[in-house]
Length: 221
Image 1: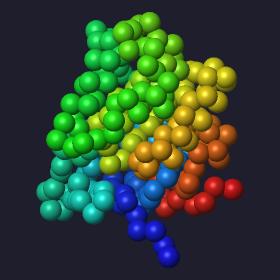
Image 2 (image 1 turned 90 degrees about the vertical axis):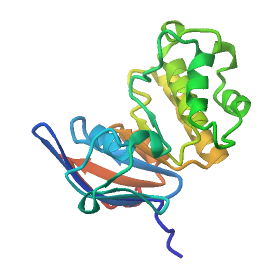
Image 3 (image 1 turned 90 degrees about the horizontal axis):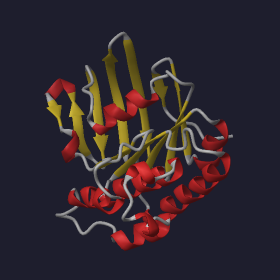
Image 4 (image 1 turned 120 degrees about the vertical axis):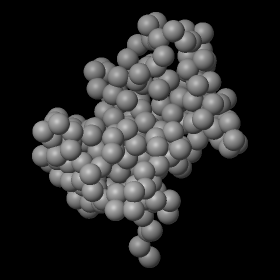
């Protein structure tokens, strides 16, 4: 039986001179958006998250229409329950790790959500709670950013090259953590990378993004 898609994307958008044209579906597990730098992967994540508006098309998540340009439907980012882990983590520098996590928790205040203690334990960040982001390594920032996104109780988790600039040993550790998050929490993910080894290791399915064009995924080799 074919799995019913959780996410349906059929949109076109322009960001300055750059044009994005995406038509694909994604299901459970990890859908990897794979392609070279500048291909439009981050722009595509921002479109799904609600940070930019498409000029044409439709976007559906869990049967909820988030965008339908023809019908003038555009659900704002804060109502989509989509978690976004930015490439540079974007933690609040004036807040401790515990306070950054509380910010993520705020978005799930009307929904039981995932227990914070479980997220902290899985990601191994309990000893960091009193630190501020300036005292964290790149790998630690990535783990805290992922924890904050999970605590917002997202229906979809978007990850924009979260391992960029992280050394090989820590990179392997975080890849294993991402796989554990997938298995423990069951939140579907879109994961952006231009590293083929990451794509081949993580992908349940893969969407190749080239020159602003993304089409239906194929199974990884």
